Every structure is written in structure tokens, then in C-alpha cells.
Length: 46
Image (cartoon, rainbow, N blue to C red; front, side, top):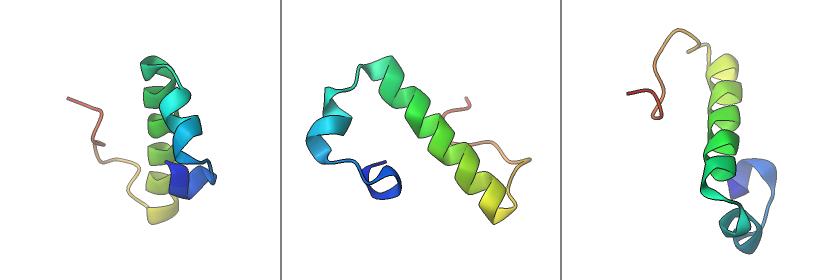
């Protein structure tokens, strides 16, 4: 997440768990759209 959003490590770890998970989902959705993988499940879908 730090790589994609250009956030430092401390900022990412300072987020609450639910907020960090939300941002991970957002980055994942953006990557799926860019890669043409919109129909596939991501890591967070169980």
C-alpha cells in the first residue's frame, strides 16, 4: 500500500485495522481494473 499511495511505513501502520483494510481493497480494485481482472476474486474475498 505504501508503494501505490506513496505513504510512509509509519502512516500505514498508524491507520486503524478497518481503515487499512479499506485502503487495501481500494488499491486492489484499482489494480484489477487496470489489469483487466475485474471479474476475479481478490485476496480479501473469502
